[in-house]
Amino acid sequence: MKIGIIGAGLIGQILANKFNVSGHEIILADRKGANAIKAVADAVGVKAVELEEVVLDIDVLIVSIPLINIPDLVQTLKGQIEDKTIIVETTNYWPHRDGNVDAIDNGMVNSVWVQQQFGRPVVKAFSNIGAYSMAAEGKPSGTADRIALAVSGDVQQAIDVVMGIVDEAGFDPLDAGKLEDSWRQQACGPAYCTDLTLAELINARKTTKKDELREKQELAFSKMKELGDEYFDNIVSGNYPDGFVDHAVDINRAINQLKPRKISSKI
Ligand SMILES: NC(=O)c1ccc[n+]([C@@H]2O[C@H](COP(=O)([O-])OP(=O)(O)OC[C@H]3O[C@@H](n4cnc5c(N)ncnc54)[C@H](OP(=O)(O)O)[C@@H]3O)[C@@H](O)[C@H]2O)c1
Image (cartoon, rainbow, N blue to C red; front, side, top):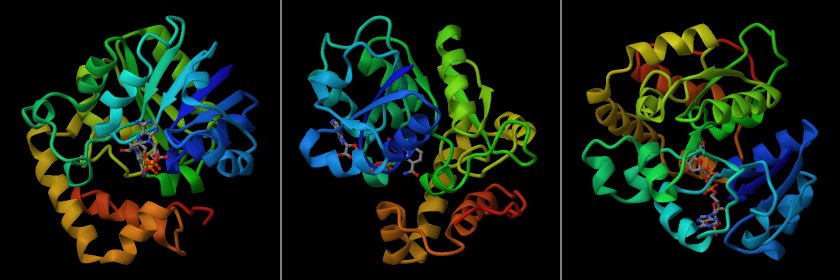
């Protein structure tokens, strides 16, 4: 497939690399422009393009930018995303980083808000795993302890296509149903960044309690703050010291009374 990716940050780069390795044709764009991200694109073997070009004749568009910048992007791309293109969005809502969005604060599911901004169906995927795990993990189908990722959306054909690229990227895809129900994998419930297997993820989504999510997110944020600036520097830079993945996953696991992570990672 031809896949356009918007956002040349941590997630955008990792996905560009994985989809390229899977044999797809990848173009990568970002608000900084093609020249500014050329080195990053070269490093993962894909082509850097301008925003106007990234939406041309593609099967799938991955939007991996902070949630708060989605309305700007939608304005920039107005009328340019072709009807045939499946839009995938990877956002999570972190008011600590994004600032407050009233509709979401008042209970709207974060990806339903994103879908409203686009004014057409989106698929939520690659959102319930940390960049640190996404980079370090990814195993062939059938491997024991393969991490599962939730895929939500309102158009079944689009979910099916996205489940295919999740699988190719090395993760068990879970059809998580409608977007309205995607709060079940939102931050910081048991299905969020806890690196679960398929059976565990299904169970975690079932046990997620909507009214506890915000409190758990505050708890996760305060735990990260306790770890100091170095921890945030690692998170933002993508430079992860030994043991970082297990530590980061276990913060989310502990908040949700899940057992500590035992599977090995390749960092
Ligand atoms: N990091 C994680 O562990 C993780 C895990 C799952 C999901 N997510 C979600 O995935 C998304 C991307 O996360 P990330 O960690 O990759 O973020 P990131 O490293 O900050 O990268 C975001 C990229 O998007 C670009 N961008 C921002 N606004 C834009 C716009 N209006 N148009 C085009 N490009 C724009 C940024 O460019 P500038 O450099 O110019 O700002 C940057 O290159 C976020 O919604 C995040 O919540 C993150």
